[in-house]
Length: 115
Length: 112
Image 1 (tube, rainbow over the protein chains, first blue to last red):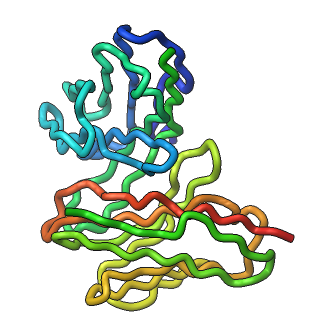
Image 2 (tube, rainbow over the protein chains, first blue to last red):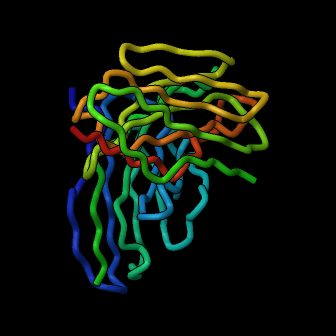
């Protein structure tokens, strides 16, 4: 019963580096999401995906890239990391949103520090 | 636009009852969710409301008034482990297929 797992849990890198955060879910949920959580801002949506090969921008997509070649994986890449991207990143998934009552289930998060 | 407001912090005594309010202004509405998040952990789902009224789940209840754009989470018989942030989230859509929009959360401290 693995559910949704994120890796790494902690990451320190330097400005300008490329970083990829991984997210894997075992529920076969169609929807997957990436959020960042910062003090004073709460959870903000970066990107989401309704199915394999379908992705959409959220509230704060600039500087991030996502892909979804397989239903169970939804990696998030920072192409050239900046200090403002230091944050806690949460991946989430949910079943088909018909009826609107499907909650999002969150991974344990990745704490990313950019020096 | 979207606006979801919650108090930033609240303090309550062990064994007491606390009500955490959430007001929202969204262009559409297809459900309101409450999540609990302990420090350093992931948010976990608590409750869902889409129709007006009260939903009860053990010590936790959630209320919704769509006409007022208002919800509250009621926690009874508070325990020390209830110290956490409580996040209000709205599905801003008149169909099912949009992500949740989160408020900034209310940090609840339960004291002895």
